[in-house]
Image (cartoon, rainbow, N blue to C red; front, side, top):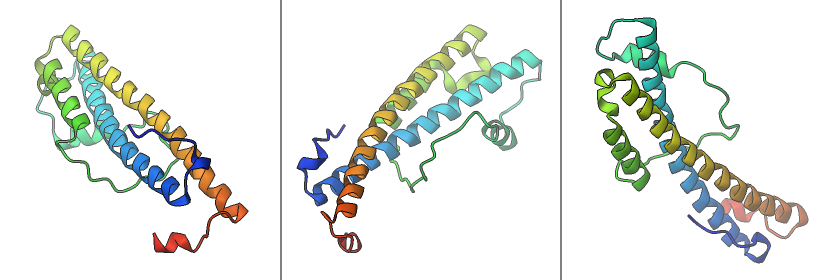
Length: 164
């Protein structure tokens, strides 16, 4: 992860560059976190199906859409940015290996204890990404505050934004 030094000791270009680098890290973490949340939602839906006694069938596109269409709480108030995350990114690979290890691809065949264990492991992964994301937001906010301060105080030329 990119370490941020005191933004007041950085040039405006360095502050912008550091903020952009952190935003790119946050994009990856947010993407992988959402993937993990989706996997948890699917696994919890399997638990619900078993509890309700709903017959097992192949997971259809409609089933998946219904699971992902459920509201589970508020998200970030930050506007999303377009992301293009490689399937080879280390966090994506880590999540895929975790899912393979816990048997995510065979949810319907896992016994109840194994299904619960899979949910717990994927949730741990998601919570770790959430903590990383929160830490990144604090750093991004600090850099953004420094930029705003410079623009307000005249320490940075607003016209330079158009050139970047």
